[in-house]
Length: 397
Image (cartoon, rainbow, N blue to C red; front, side, top):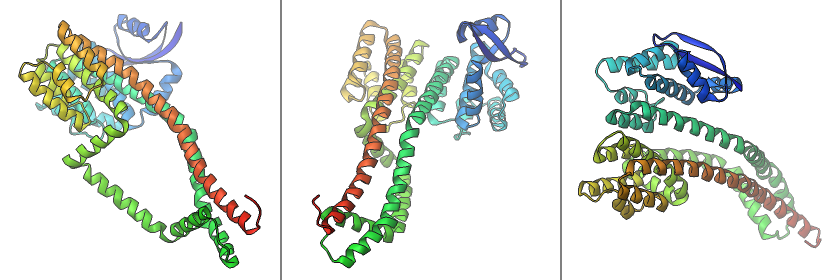
Protein backbone atom coordinates (compact mmCIF):
# COMPACT_ATOMS: atom_id res chain seq x y z
CA UNK A 1 0.00 0.00 0.00
CA UNK A 2 1.23 3.49 -0.85
CA UNK A 3 0.33 6.91 0.48
CA UNK A 4 -1.02 9.41 -2.08
CA UNK A 5 -1.72 13.09 -1.66
CA UNK A 6 -4.90 14.28 -3.32
CA UNK A 7 -6.84 17.39 -4.23
CA UNK A 8 -10.57 16.98 -4.80
CA UNK A 9 -13.72 19.03 -5.12
CA UNK A 10 -17.36 18.52 -4.33
CA UNK A 11 -20.11 19.29 -6.86
CA UNK A 12 -20.65 22.72 -5.27
CA UNK A 13 -16.94 23.61 -5.71
CA UNK A 14 -15.63 23.02 -2.17
CA UNK A 15 -11.95 21.99 -2.31
CA UNK A 16 -10.54 19.29 -0.04
CA UNK A 17 -6.93 18.17 0.24
CA UNK A 18 -5.35 15.34 2.14
CA UNK A 19 -3.71 11.94 1.86
CA UNK A 20 -5.15 8.53 1.14
CA UNK A 21 -3.74 5.02 1.33
CA UNK A 22 -4.22 2.80 -1.72
CA UNK A 23 -2.48 0.27 -3.95
CA UNK A 24 -2.23 2.64 -6.92
CA UNK A 25 -3.60 5.95 -8.25
CA UNK A 26 -6.63 4.33 -9.88
CA UNK A 27 -7.67 2.68 -6.61
CA UNK A 28 -7.16 5.98 -4.78
CA UNK A 29 -9.38 7.73 -7.33
CA UNK A 30 -12.11 5.11 -6.94
CA UNK A 31 -12.03 5.46 -3.17
CA UNK A 32 -12.38 9.25 -3.42
CA UNK A 33 -15.29 8.95 -5.87
CA UNK A 34 -17.01 6.52 -3.50
CA UNK A 35 -16.57 9.13 -0.77
CA UNK A 36 -18.61 11.59 -2.86
CA UNK A 37 -15.85 13.89 -4.13
CA UNK A 38 -14.31 14.46 -7.57
CA UNK A 39 -10.54 13.84 -7.58
CA UNK A 40 -8.58 16.55 -9.40
CA UNK A 41 -5.02 15.54 -8.55
CA UNK A 42 -3.65 12.31 -7.14
CA UNK A 43 0.08 11.85 -6.72
CA UNK A 44 2.72 10.54 -4.42
CA UNK A 45 3.77 13.37 -2.05
CA UNK A 46 7.17 13.96 -3.71
CA UNK A 47 5.62 13.88 -7.16
CA UNK A 48 2.98 16.36 -6.04
CA UNK A 49 5.69 18.82 -4.93
CA UNK A 50 7.49 18.35 -8.24
CA UNK A 51 4.29 19.02 -10.23
CA UNK A 52 3.56 22.16 -8.22
CA UNK A 53 7.03 23.47 -9.06
CA UNK A 54 6.52 22.60 -12.73
CA UNK A 55 3.07 24.23 -12.79
CA UNK A 56 4.64 27.68 -12.40
CA UNK A 57 5.31 27.65 -16.14
CA UNK A 58 2.54 28.26 -18.72
CA UNK A 59 2.81 24.65 -19.93
CA UNK A 60 2.53 23.44 -16.36
CA UNK A 61 -0.60 25.57 -15.94
CA UNK A 62 -2.00 24.02 -19.12
CA UNK A 63 -1.40 20.50 -17.81
CA UNK A 64 -3.05 21.33 -14.48
CA UNK A 65 -6.03 22.97 -16.23
CA UNK A 66 -6.51 19.99 -18.56
CA UNK A 67 -6.21 17.43 -15.76
CA UNK A 68 -8.74 19.17 -13.54
CA UNK A 69 -11.22 20.02 -16.31
CA UNK A 70 -11.10 16.45 -17.62
CA UNK A 71 -11.82 15.09 -14.15
CA UNK A 72 -14.81 17.41 -13.70
CA UNK A 73 -16.31 16.64 -17.13
CA UNK A 74 -15.86 12.88 -16.68
CA UNK A 75 -17.68 13.22 -13.35
CA UNK A 76 -20.69 14.57 -15.29
CA UNK A 77 -20.49 18.30 -14.52
CA UNK A 78 -21.43 20.68 -17.38
CA UNK A 79 -18.65 22.71 -18.99
CA UNK A 80 -19.63 26.10 -17.59
CA UNK A 81 -19.94 24.72 -14.06
CA UNK A 82 -16.58 22.98 -14.38
CA UNK A 83 -14.89 26.17 -15.58
CA UNK A 84 -16.49 28.14 -12.77
CA UNK A 85 -15.01 25.71 -10.23
CA UNK A 86 -11.57 25.91 -11.88
CA UNK A 87 -11.69 29.72 -11.81
CA UNK A 88 -12.23 29.57 -8.05
CA UNK A 89 -9.59 26.95 -7.21
CA UNK A 90 -6.77 27.86 -9.61
CA UNK A 91 -3.51 28.55 -7.76
CA UNK A 92 -2.12 30.67 -10.64
CA UNK A 93 -3.45 34.23 -10.78
CA UNK A 94 -2.85 34.37 -14.54
CA UNK A 95 -4.67 31.08 -15.14
CA UNK A 96 -7.54 32.20 -12.89
CA UNK A 97 -8.08 35.27 -15.09
CA UNK A 98 -7.79 33.21 -18.28
CA UNK A 99 -10.40 30.68 -17.09
CA UNK A 100 -12.73 33.55 -16.15
CA UNK A 101 -12.24 35.04 -19.62
CA UNK A 102 -13.00 31.66 -21.26
CA UNK A 103 -16.12 31.24 -19.12
CA UNK A 104 -17.30 34.74 -20.03
CA UNK A 105 -16.82 34.04 -23.76
CA UNK A 106 -18.81 30.79 -23.50
CA UNK A 107 -21.66 32.51 -21.67
CA UNK A 108 -21.70 35.14 -24.44
CA UNK A 109 -22.28 32.41 -27.03
CA UNK A 110 -18.78 31.37 -28.14
CA UNK A 111 -17.77 27.73 -28.36
CA UNK A 112 -15.12 26.42 -25.99
CA UNK A 113 -12.55 26.10 -28.78
CA UNK A 114 -13.21 29.66 -30.01
CA UNK A 115 -12.77 30.94 -26.46
CA UNK A 116 -9.41 29.16 -26.23
CA UNK A 117 -8.14 30.85 -29.42
CA UNK A 118 -8.11 34.18 -27.55
CA UNK A 119 -5.22 32.89 -25.42
CA UNK A 120 -2.65 31.48 -27.89
CA UNK A 121 0.23 31.81 -25.41
CA UNK A 122 -1.35 29.17 -23.17
CA UNK A 123 -3.30 27.02 -25.62
CA UNK A 124 -1.34 25.84 -28.71
CA UNK A 125 -2.97 25.24 -32.10
CA UNK A 126 -2.92 21.45 -31.67
CA UNK A 127 -4.73 21.74 -28.33
CA UNK A 128 -7.43 24.01 -29.78
CA UNK A 129 -7.97 21.80 -32.82
CA UNK A 130 -8.29 18.70 -30.63
CA UNK A 131 -10.88 20.49 -28.49
CA UNK A 132 -12.73 21.60 -31.62
CA UNK A 133 -12.78 18.01 -32.85
CA UNK A 134 -14.13 16.86 -29.47
CA UNK A 135 -16.87 19.46 -29.57
CA UNK A 136 -17.85 18.41 -33.10
CA UNK A 137 -18.13 14.78 -32.03
CA UNK A 138 -19.70 15.40 -28.63
CA UNK A 139 -16.73 13.70 -26.95
CA UNK A 140 -15.04 16.68 -25.29
CA UNK A 141 -14.45 14.76 -22.06
CA UNK A 142 -12.74 11.91 -23.96
CA UNK A 143 -10.59 14.30 -25.98
CA UNK A 144 -9.52 16.21 -22.86
CA UNK A 145 -8.59 12.93 -21.21
CA UNK A 146 -6.41 12.07 -24.24
CA UNK A 147 -4.93 15.57 -24.22
CA UNK A 148 -4.10 15.11 -20.56
CA UNK A 149 -2.27 11.87 -21.35
CA UNK A 150 -0.48 13.59 -24.25
CA UNK A 151 0.64 16.55 -22.12
CA UNK A 152 1.83 14.29 -19.31
CA UNK A 153 3.82 12.06 -21.68
CA UNK A 154 5.25 15.16 -23.40
CA UNK A 155 6.34 16.63 -20.06
CA UNK A 156 7.87 13.29 -19.06
CA UNK A 157 9.70 13.05 -22.38
CA UNK A 158 11.01 16.62 -22.14
CA UNK A 159 12.23 15.93 -18.61
CA UNK A 160 14.02 12.80 -19.87
CA UNK A 161 15.62 14.76 -22.73
CA UNK A 162 16.63 17.58 -20.37
CA UNK A 163 18.21 15.16 -17.91
CA UNK A 164 20.02 13.30 -20.69
CA UNK A 165 21.33 16.53 -22.26
CA UNK A 166 22.71 18.18 -19.10
CA UNK A 167 26.09 16.44 -19.31
CA UNK A 168 26.73 16.94 -23.06
CA UNK A 169 25.54 20.57 -22.92
CA UNK A 170 27.97 21.31 -20.09
CA UNK A 171 30.74 19.67 -22.11
CA UNK A 172 29.81 21.62 -25.24
CA UNK A 173 29.74 24.88 -23.29
CA UNK A 174 33.12 24.17 -21.72
CA UNK A 175 34.48 23.09 -25.11
CA UNK A 176 33.11 26.24 -26.77
CA UNK A 177 34.77 28.45 -24.16
CA UNK A 178 38.05 26.55 -24.64
CA UNK A 179 37.89 26.93 -28.43
CA UNK A 180 37.11 30.65 -28.10
CA UNK A 181 40.09 31.19 -25.81
CA UNK A 182 42.35 29.22 -28.15
CA UNK A 183 41.22 31.14 -31.24
CA UNK A 184 41.13 34.64 -29.75
CA UNK A 185 43.95 34.60 -27.20
CA UNK A 186 46.37 31.67 -27.50
CA UNK A 187 46.68 31.28 -31.28
CA UNK A 188 47.37 34.98 -32.04
CA UNK A 189 50.42 34.82 -29.74
CA UNK A 190 51.69 31.68 -31.48
CA UNK A 191 51.08 33.18 -34.93
CA UNK A 192 53.22 36.21 -33.98
CA UNK A 193 56.06 33.92 -32.92
CA UNK A 194 55.81 31.85 -36.11
CA UNK A 195 55.78 35.03 -38.24
CA UNK A 196 59.01 36.28 -36.63
CA UNK A 197 60.74 32.98 -37.36
CA UNK A 198 59.68 33.08 -41.01
CA UNK A 199 59.34 29.32 -41.26
CA UNK A 200 56.85 27.53 -43.49
CA UNK A 201 54.09 26.17 -41.31
CA UNK A 202 52.23 22.89 -41.89
CA UNK A 203 48.90 23.21 -43.69
CA UNK A 204 46.74 22.36 -40.62
CA UNK A 205 48.50 25.11 -38.65
CA UNK A 206 47.95 27.62 -41.47
CA UNK A 207 44.27 26.74 -41.55
CA UNK A 208 43.87 27.18 -37.79
CA UNK A 209 45.78 30.48 -37.71
CA UNK A 210 43.77 31.85 -40.66
CA UNK A 211 40.54 30.86 -38.87
CA UNK A 212 41.77 32.52 -35.67
CA UNK A 213 42.49 35.77 -37.52
CA UNK A 214 39.10 35.72 -39.24
CA UNK A 215 37.28 35.15 -35.94
CA UNK A 216 39.23 37.91 -34.18
CA UNK A 217 38.64 40.43 -36.98
CA UNK A 218 35.12 39.64 -38.15
CA UNK A 219 33.31 38.08 -35.18
CA UNK A 220 30.87 41.01 -35.16
CA UNK A 221 29.97 40.40 -38.82
CA UNK A 222 29.33 36.74 -38.09
CA UNK A 223 27.13 37.65 -35.11
CA UNK A 224 25.10 40.21 -37.08
CA UNK A 225 24.81 37.78 -40.00
CA UNK A 226 23.52 35.03 -37.69
CA UNK A 227 20.92 37.37 -36.13
CA UNK A 228 19.78 38.64 -39.55
CA UNK A 229 19.63 35.10 -40.92
CA UNK A 230 17.53 33.93 -37.96
CA UNK A 231 15.07 36.81 -38.36
CA UNK A 232 14.80 36.19 -42.11
CA UNK A 233 14.26 32.47 -41.50
CA UNK A 234 11.52 33.06 -38.92
CA UNK A 235 9.72 35.45 -41.28
CA UNK A 236 10.06 33.01 -44.17
CA UNK A 237 8.53 30.05 -42.36
CA UNK A 238 5.55 32.22 -41.38
CA UNK A 239 4.53 32.25 -45.04
CA UNK A 240 2.61 29.29 -46.50
CA UNK A 241 5.35 28.47 -49.01
CA UNK A 242 8.07 28.81 -46.38
CA UNK A 243 6.26 26.65 -43.84
CA UNK A 244 5.65 23.96 -46.46
CA UNK A 245 9.32 24.01 -47.55
CA UNK A 246 10.53 23.86 -43.93
CA UNK A 247 8.17 20.99 -43.08
CA UNK A 248 9.33 19.16 -46.20
CA UNK A 249 12.97 19.62 -45.11
CA UNK A 250 12.17 18.32 -41.62
CA UNK A 251 10.54 15.25 -43.15
CA UNK A 252 13.74 14.51 -45.08
CA UNK A 253 15.97 15.01 -42.04
CA UNK A 254 13.86 13.41 -39.28
CA UNK A 255 11.11 11.68 -41.22
CA UNK A 256 10.84 8.63 -38.99
CA UNK A 257 10.15 10.56 -35.78
CA UNK A 258 7.89 13.16 -37.43
CA UNK A 259 5.81 10.50 -39.18
CA UNK A 260 5.35 8.63 -35.91
CA UNK A 261 4.25 11.82 -34.12
CA UNK A 262 1.76 12.81 -36.81
CA UNK A 263 0.50 9.25 -37.30
CA UNK A 264 -0.25 8.91 -33.58
CA UNK A 265 -2.08 12.28 -33.47
CA UNK A 266 -4.06 11.66 -36.65
CA UNK A 267 -5.04 8.10 -35.76
CA UNK A 268 -5.94 8.97 -32.15
CA UNK A 269 -8.18 11.87 -33.17
CA UNK A 270 -9.82 10.12 -36.12
CA UNK A 271 -10.41 6.90 -34.17
CA UNK A 272 -11.94 8.78 -31.22
CA UNK A 273 -14.27 10.77 -33.47
CA UNK A 274 -15.39 7.74 -35.50
CA UNK A 275 -16.02 5.76 -32.34
CA UNK A 276 -18.25 8.60 -31.14
CA UNK A 277 -20.39 8.50 -34.27
CA UNK A 278 -18.92 11.45 -36.19
CA UNK A 279 -19.26 10.99 -39.99
CA UNK A 280 -16.05 10.00 -41.76
CA UNK A 281 -15.63 13.16 -43.86
CA UNK A 282 -16.19 15.47 -40.91
CA UNK A 283 -13.87 13.37 -38.75
CA UNK A 284 -11.17 13.49 -41.45
CA UNK A 285 -11.36 17.29 -41.69
CA UNK A 286 -11.16 17.72 -37.92
CA UNK A 287 -8.32 15.21 -37.65
CA UNK A 288 -6.36 16.97 -40.39
CA UNK A 289 -6.34 20.15 -38.28
CA UNK A 290 -4.41 18.36 -35.52
CA UNK A 291 -1.48 17.63 -37.88
CA UNK A 292 1.35 20.16 -37.55
CA UNK A 293 3.35 19.14 -40.63
CA UNK A 294 1.95 20.89 -43.72
CA UNK A 295 3.19 18.20 -46.13
CA UNK A 296 1.29 15.45 -44.32
CA UNK A 297 -1.76 17.69 -43.79
CA UNK A 298 -1.88 18.42 -47.53
CA UNK A 299 -1.82 14.69 -48.23
CA UNK A 300 -4.83 14.20 -45.93
CA UNK A 301 -6.76 16.62 -48.19
CA UNK A 302 -6.25 14.12 -51.01
CA UNK A 303 -7.50 11.35 -48.71
CA UNK A 304 -10.65 13.37 -47.98
CA UNK A 305 -11.35 13.70 -51.70
CA UNK A 306 -10.87 9.94 -52.10
CA UNK A 307 -13.28 9.27 -49.24
CA UNK A 308 -15.88 11.53 -50.91
CA UNK A 309 -15.60 9.38 -54.04
CA UNK A 310 -16.32 6.24 -52.01
CA UNK A 311 -12.74 4.90 -51.99
CA UNK A 312 -12.51 4.77 -48.21
CA UNK A 313 -9.27 5.98 -46.61
CA UNK A 314 -6.90 2.99 -46.78
CA UNK A 315 -6.27 3.20 -50.55
CA UNK A 316 -5.92 7.03 -50.70
CA UNK A 317 -3.55 6.94 -47.70
CA UNK A 318 -1.44 4.29 -49.44
CA UNK A 319 -1.34 6.41 -52.61
CA UNK A 320 -0.09 9.58 -50.87
CA UNK A 321 2.49 7.51 -48.93
CA UNK A 322 2.90 9.78 -45.90
CA UNK A 323 2.12 7.28 -43.12
CA UNK A 324 4.36 4.34 -42.12
CA UNK A 325 3.68 0.98 -43.83
CA UNK A 326 2.56 -0.73 -40.60
CA UNK A 327 -0.04 1.97 -39.97
CA UNK A 328 -1.34 1.65 -43.54
CA UNK A 329 -1.65 -2.13 -43.16
CA UNK A 330 -3.52 -1.84 -39.86
CA UNK A 331 -5.89 0.80 -41.27
CA UNK A 332 -6.58 -1.41 -44.30
CA UNK A 333 -7.42 -4.37 -42.06
CA UNK A 334 -9.68 -2.19 -39.92
CA UNK A 335 -11.54 -0.92 -42.98
CA UNK A 336 -11.99 -4.42 -44.39
CA UNK A 337 -13.31 -5.80 -41.10
CA UNK A 338 -15.57 -2.84 -40.34
CA UNK A 339 -13.55 -1.93 -37.22
CA UNK A 340 -11.74 1.13 -38.52
CA UNK A 341 -12.27 3.16 -35.34
CA UNK A 342 -10.86 0.43 -33.10
CA UNK A 343 -7.90 -0.21 -35.41
CA UNK A 344 -7.07 3.50 -35.60
CA UNK A 345 -6.85 3.66 -31.80
CA UNK A 346 -4.55 0.64 -31.87
CA UNK A 347 -2.41 2.40 -34.49
CA UNK A 348 -2.20 5.45 -32.21
CA UNK A 349 -1.15 3.37 -29.19
CA UNK A 350 1.44 1.49 -31.25
CA UNK A 351 3.08 4.62 -32.58
CA UNK A 352 2.95 6.51 -29.30
CA UNK A 353 5.01 3.72 -27.74
CA UNK A 354 7.29 3.53 -30.76
CA UNK A 355 7.81 7.30 -30.65
CA UNK A 356 9.07 7.23 -27.07
CA UNK A 357 11.57 4.52 -27.99
CA UNK A 358 12.70 6.40 -31.12
CA UNK A 359 13.29 9.67 -29.25
CA UNK A 360 15.19 7.93 -26.47
CA UNK A 361 17.40 6.29 -29.08
CA UNK A 362 17.98 9.64 -30.76
CA UNK A 363 18.98 11.29 -27.47
CA UNK A 364 21.27 8.35 -26.67
CA UNK A 365 22.95 8.82 -30.06
CA UNK A 366 23.12 12.62 -29.83
CA UNK A 367 24.97 12.70 -26.51
CA UNK A 368 28.15 10.85 -27.62
CA UNK A 369 27.95 12.54 -31.05
CA UNK A 370 28.13 16.01 -29.47
CA UNK A 371 31.00 14.96 -27.21
CA UNK A 372 32.88 13.38 -30.10
CA UNK A 373 32.39 16.43 -32.34
CA UNK A 374 33.69 18.84 -29.71
CA UNK A 375 36.64 16.56 -28.99
CA UNK A 376 37.57 16.41 -32.69
CA UNK A 377 37.52 20.23 -33.03
CA UNK A 378 39.70 20.80 -29.97
CA UNK A 379 41.93 17.87 -30.92
CA UNK A 380 42.50 19.31 -34.42
CA UNK A 381 43.52 22.70 -32.99
CA UNK A 382 45.96 21.10 -30.54
CA UNK A 383 47.34 18.79 -33.25
CA UNK A 384 47.89 21.74 -35.60
CA UNK A 385 49.83 23.66 -32.97
CA UNK A 386 51.96 20.63 -32.07
CA UNK A 387 52.81 20.10 -35.74
CA UNK A 388 54.04 23.69 -35.94
CA UNK A 389 56.13 23.34 -32.80
CA UNK A 390 57.66 20.07 -34.02
CA UNK A 391 58.44 21.58 -37.42
CA UNK A 392 60.24 24.54 -35.83
CA UNK A 393 62.37 22.36 -33.57
CA UNK A 394 62.94 19.85 -36.37
CA UNK A 395 61.58 17.01 -34.25
CA UNK A 396 59.89 14.11 -35.98
CA UNK A 397 56.11 14.16 -35.83
